[in-house]
Image 1 (cartoon, rainbow, N blue to C red):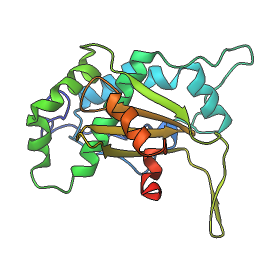
Image 2 (tube, rainbow, N blue to C red):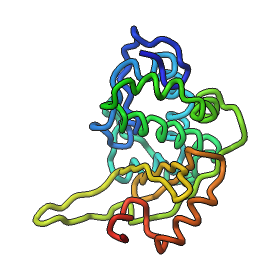
Image 3 (cartoon, rainbow, N blue to C red):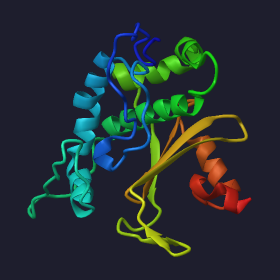
Length: 217
């Protein structure tokens, strides 16, 4: 086993990677130990995820939805604080990190997935950007899909959505990652540092969310 970010041997690593942080309500989507080595896991936890989750806007949303961190603590948000968004580049790196891990999550059942992912040179720019903070800032798109306190109904069951994610290709075979956090959709291109393909995809699909594209077709 080699780490998908630094490519070092990770056979002795113990960390289980919740690629959507537990502080966003994720208990089901995680990668087995060794997929992300302990060193990279600790780096992301301290230098990327914590910075994003501690931003005023994220603390406000988590506080309103009463979503605790993995230690069971609830975030606070002062009445005098401004609900500022996370730093743009930091949020971009967070999205690329989660997107790459989501791609791995979808390929875990494929034989030799680890070798395929780690040796794939096309993914190196993503690794350099999200893990080592190298390269130009990668743009991402965002928009509100539904209110943060929206309640959905399926039959007799009522539920809320804290997060959802998906991967999709454009006609030009660019791979995009989409994630909705508390009703806000974020989309980043895992195939290149631009969003033109996504804008064209939106026009072709009447601006429907990638999460609901099957309903459109």
